[in-house]
Image (cartoon, rainbow, N blue to C red; front, side, top):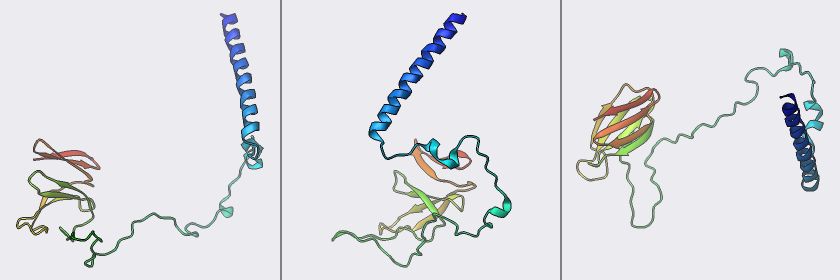
Length: 165
């Protein structure tokens, strides 16, 4: 058993030596201008870094980086369209609408994420605007995904998946 373990260790060491020499040859031919990360004095092994509170910047002294959405209030803006096409706002004034689902009967369900409910919108007279507006389901934490299957609306909420007929 000892000889087998010793033979495996020798084989592993030999394969490591061959692989490292091949990598070194490859690196010298293709990466002439790159430095070895181990040669960076800030990254040397065993170097101890000491962070003291007095050496740190004050909290919130630098500008805070954020990736927030730009909110532009609706004031009648419309997208530019090709000649002969028109666009109208189906519904305005919803609270943080995130997803919408068009049902087979052309009703529209909108997930209002911050409010935590679904709103049902219906165009009854065919003018392209929602005439019928009703809260469809509520008590969600943050509804997001919507799907329709076999007469049921499936809602992906932050707390799980809910089903409504």
